[in-house]
Length: 295
Ligand code: CP
Ligand code: NVA
Image (cartoon, rainbow, N blue to C red; front, top):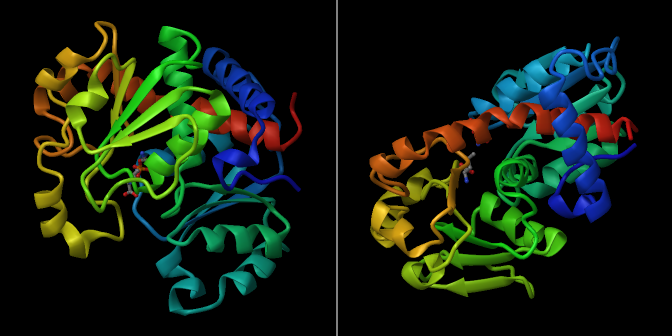
């Protein structure tokens, strides 16, 4: 049983297959693979809030003929301390697949191992792989191949979204620059990644400027110190002037105006940013179809 728990679970060829399936789901909505999940139920186990990920998986699975079972971790025994490996062994006997949003990466790894189910990482503290495949899909539909492009991540480079970008930079062979203050720089890197504290140096000649919240879910207790540390790590009109003229701006959302992105950049780039949000649907359908063996 194949799962998608981190970006590197896919080879480049597999990731490319997912993106081409996503294109079919997007352009043939409602008719492509409409019966693929007939008779199948996917459990969505979420320990953190979600709008985009939850809705896109629920709608996407239903449009493929399947059913969804949304399980807030607090409403099942998991929230009262039942181990993830026991939850996994129970659900493995009842449902056909699982989508999990949680804290530790080890929880999705253990769930996949003990359930035997196709399991998809819907965000952990380590990675947000469905998001990054969507971001690449969104960039490439408008600007062509991301290979060799300069992608700049501004903000908390030690967060899940940034980490998945670091892995994706190596897989898709684009140049990633992470601009982050001391203490919030990426702890992982590779030959495709440059780490800097200078947001201006980073933004120069960028093809894609990207940001995410300063305070990820689970980090609320650090809110005050983070807001102080991240001052200036913001996508603004001035920063955008340093980038290439056709530079795309993306944000995984939710956005906090006046913090990681200014109101005017968010609103002037809303068409791309909300297209990106909408693309979660076909890309995740592409991931599921690929995991089900559709080629
Ligand atoms: N970008 C993203 O994953 O959004 P949600 O938290 O709303 O699912
Ligand atoms: N880094 C953010 C992503 C939200 C989609 C978080 O973990 O809260």
